[in-house]
Amino acid sequence: MEDENNKVTLHGMWISTYAKKVELALKIKGITFDYVEEDLSNKSSLLLQYNPIYKKVPVLLHRGKPVSESLVILEYIDETWKNERRFLPEDPYERATVRFWATYCLQMSDTMKKAFISDKDVEEGAFDEFFEKLKVMEEGMKDFFPGGRSIICADNLRLLDIIIVCSLGTYKAAEEVLGMKILDPEKYPFVYSWVNTLLELPLVKETLPQHDKVVSRLEFIKQNGFTFQSHIS
Ligand SMILES: N[C@@H](CCC(=O)N[C@@H](CS)C(=O)NCC(=O)O)C(=O)O
Figure 1 (cartoon, rainbow, N blue to C red):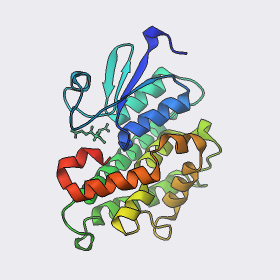
Figure 2 (tube, protein in one colour):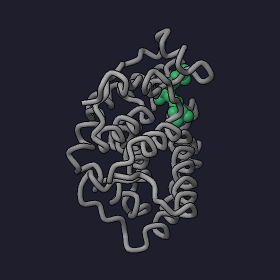
Figure 3 (cartoon, protein in one colour):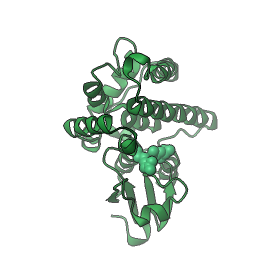
């Protein structure tokens, strides 16, 4: 149990892929935390106080101090709770490489979000930029994990595992709503099998939102457009 001085609180939103990354990271490290669900159409005064620059979730509060931006929070967690489950390697060059790909993956995720809420229909290529980035990710990850990524259990999940599975873990719901393939196993076999292996892990299953719930929210977002854009990621 964390004592009061060490108290950890996560401000998130159930369908936010960014907040989910932080939630999964806390669970992997075995950190006890309180969770505050934010209504992004009516942000709490605490969220605005803790993240006055971006006014977004996730925000992690630790010992009364707020940390925002998902990647910054993930690194903060890794550096603060240095237990055997480290998310980043020790070697500076390897760390830099992981950070590079983590940033790339977050950009890819943003591109998918923009394509999803785009007014253009799919034929007009709203997803082209996302698919290009996914292809780069596919090739990059094949080189990064030359022998493949062997995931035995949630204990050995690292930064890129957390980021990829939370970014793409609800891809089946997006495919259902859009009526098109997002994560095509023929085009992106490495990422497809990586994400699906991670999705089998009980800790990942219990962290990611339920398929039907995501489908109905994505349908709602698709119909209601930009006004509700903050509800997608
Ligand atoms: N770069 C931020 C992105 C976070 C983000 O986009 N959060 C969305 C929810 S998924 C949000 O809070 N949106 C509120 C808004 O745009 O007003 C991160 O990595 O944490």
